[in-house]
Length: 189
Image 1 (cartoon, rainbow, N blue to C red):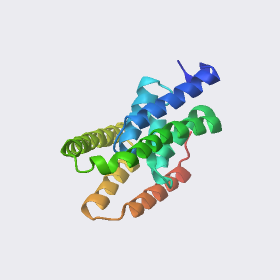
Image 2 (image 1 turned 90 degrees about the vertical axis):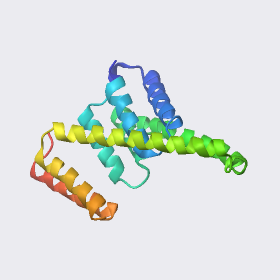
Image 3 (image 1 turned 90 degrees about the horizontal axis):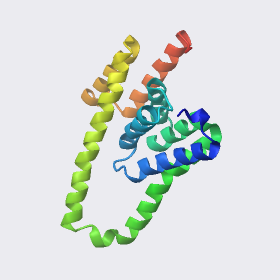
């Protein structure tokens, strides 16, 4: 059901619970939670179009702060304006706050435990797989659009960061400038 047809209370609960669950059960940071947000809000709930989500992710990544929080705020704002941004922000930041508080009390007891060390190693492998899935999904979306500038920008950013070790901040700034210049030349409809 489109979010515009939902009662406000139901909409806010669904927005909060979706971001809360994603944040609570996702390990590995923003680059893991963002593709899961895409799957939830684009594929499952169908509240946001895939191209719009790609734009929100790009803005969330280039804004200061954690990408998961930024993207969550943008998704919430897209769906329900300021109130939606606040609801999705709370859903995203509460789980790590609760989990880190609990872990801080028991960390010294588990830090050298081999079972927990293996558990964290396994989670690291899972995080790498989810990040790879996100890269493939986002790259496929860019390539499907068949627009030359975004494809060249994606390939150029990868080459600059991976091969020439250009600082990621410089890559992001140059990409943002090129994106703005492209919009000025040919505004969105």
